[in-house]
Image 1 (cartoon, rainbow, N blue to C red):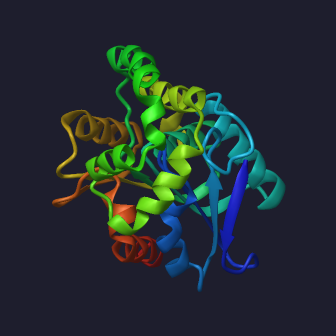
Image 2 (cartoon, one colour; image 1 turned 60 degrees about the vertical axis):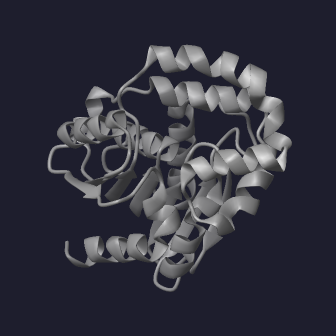
Image 3 (cartoon, rainbow, N blue to C red; image 1 turned 90 degrees about the vertical axis):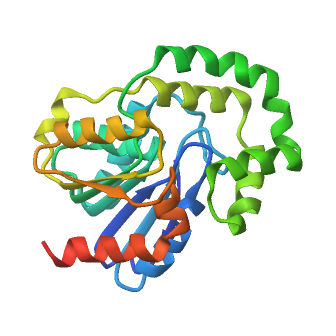
Length: 248
């Protein structure tokens, strides 16, 4: 797994895990804001453009990040945040290592498995994957995310860098992920964010995560769609991170 780093390695470390189909630039602006006071690490998840390995499972990605924290960061960090697929990997990290961070921010993570969605992913991408390399098609996809326009070139470049097999693999893993029983033992002070304008299954997932993590705080995001908090409102996201730490 490859990593992008910001800030001084001698300061307390935060890790942010990007959403599926995106890459480290998901949190680039957040990292720039926080890097004056913290050491920021942005992993590039397996199977994504600029990564060093194919995607296998959410559990394997979690294990690789835990190993990195053990080897490079003395076994724990100040905070871990994650969006969507990255949020699922964060939940898996918390399930596997209950004391790996003091704070966790889960944004728009799916926690209700769907066998129907799983079954539709392979045939859908089998027929339209080749269109991804066309700018007009990529612009249509990008517009559906409702994220800021200046991220399009990053999105287009890295979408073209994801193989069909990897894209199918991480989308299928995303569609079937379920919370582990061990999540209830997590020590991290956890905040669960979900956009007010996200679909019903994402809102139900946020409630399910909140219920599974005793003492967690559920925070709906007014007027926001999926992923907009960390990508469209980096200032607010970074300020939220700072407030969480300062108020604890």
